[in-house]
Image (cartoon, rainbow, N blue to C red; front, side, top):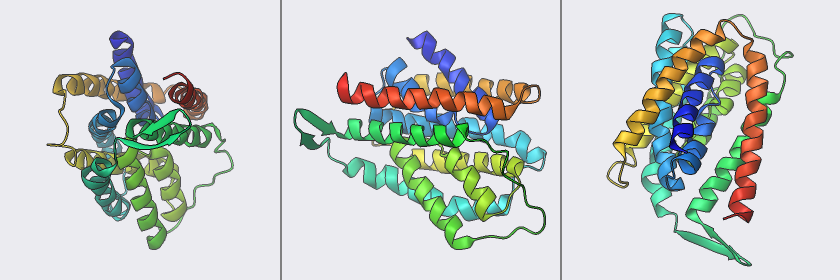
Length: 264
């Protein structure tokens, strides 16, 4: 299972390189089901893996002028604050056992996996949908500040809870509220994901025992994957890949819901 886990770590990076997101949604299931990591700890590990991989992936985007720094700062500040607060204060405050429904005991780990699975389903719908009807607007950039700040805080809260980068939420928000072209939205989302994930991860330091060897191994493979994804992205249609990956994520999300509820 560990060998499959390391191969899946490559896929996480390849997805980030190809379509600017999606790979992070696989990180927690890979850690939980293939490496046997506790779900709560897996969300912390995911922040480090996704943050480091996104940071490396953002460098070529920045060199190509595909990162809008002003937008990254405006969106990133509430997002970073929310993810750090969630990891440092909210997650530790959640009790180990929440409530009981019949014979089902809803634990902290089960709740986090269920939130994650639902997020996967929403992410898959976002990836499967056709983007042909989206038009990139030319002209001066216009900021909808209240909506950017609100969206940043919501994405930060979700990132803190489940350890996913939230690119599928960030990219549409940047296109809609900041009027960024799609390529710039993808590049800008990577630097936002990197900053909020890595700073959010510091909220867990001292509260969790970290397996740094596993973290380094998975992160290194994901970083290799992002370079492979960038190279492949020049040869294949990202829209087709995004849809195919979206269907895969949908199946994975449904699998997690069924497994956690009925086959524990």
